[in-house]
Image (cartoon, rainbow, N blue to C red; front, top):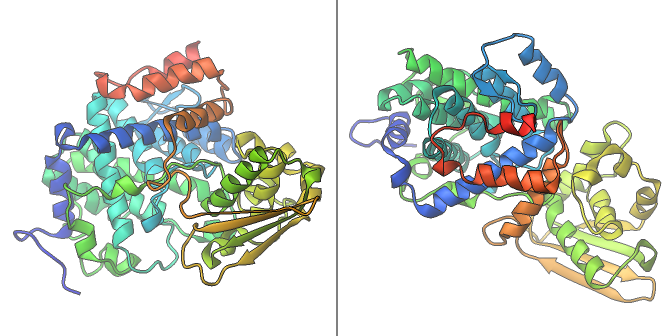
Length: 459
């Protein structure tokens, strides 16, 4: 396919120019507001994820290097190198699968760009506005790369696309010009990676891949700041990103760049679970609350999913190897928690909750069917409950909670942050969580980001 060029610039150079020439005042108000909201969400899920399996080992590996402390590990308040902080915070943010998702491109952009940008913003003393600008620009590149890809060969796109977003965000905060940012993007090509094999095997590598990408993006930008050159055609070159990682549509990548913001389609997750579970969870919680259902009141729960969603969460529930992961990728477990507890929060993916024998008993009542006519990914979905007195309760939903078509309210975002803050290395009360949320929500007015998490841990 022919690749679109503008005034002789490669696609990589066009992305670099967009990053270099776009500042806070150039971004629409709704983009800034959405970025602030997703930064808060990312910090929350990272806080909660800091004690997930594998996170302690990763954190200690970084701290053992005793690097100069220039950037903060959010959940512990400890200081380390910018690259180390980007890695650890990125891994924490990914650990619970509770982070934002850009569905069109199968990318979770914020868990890569936010840790990378925060690390460099702390190191350089950048303002809150500069930080938010960098995150927005990095996310736009990561999302557009996801939207542009036409076929996935098995790459983990959050990492593979995210490393370019992280490099752009970090380079912006290092005040590089267009050439410098182009070099950073070119260097990011050499570090792009991440495989879905980690998901297939449900290994801890899955949650590390976003951290790897954040760290690599920071390093690429730091090298570029030292005038280290990278390929000018990293995206479209003979052995560039599109050639090696999957054919891409150049028009989708750059059309409306700076005017239309793909990242605005990024969803904030309502539940700490695979997105394929979210519509049935929402529907069943609603039915349980509205009809005051208890476990004994339910004889049968039927769920209809798209073929895509069924492939992710429709298999048999087996918590024997990894209870948390099994729960997060099981529609049967999700249905049981939704009816019996009328919720699915972080407490409900802890081992003691997942292995509750009453949940196991209820799961026998749940059946799952594939709706072959449903061409959607995660929605629509339908639930059908038959009560013990023979009543049939049925409901469908067209849009996943948290998406632009079914957005979370401010109250729901605040409640999610409190739920996250109550877990992790330093559980916070609701009052302290709200104080931290207010601070993070006001970063646009801060001259620098230093000390925010240190003060939380000193309380």
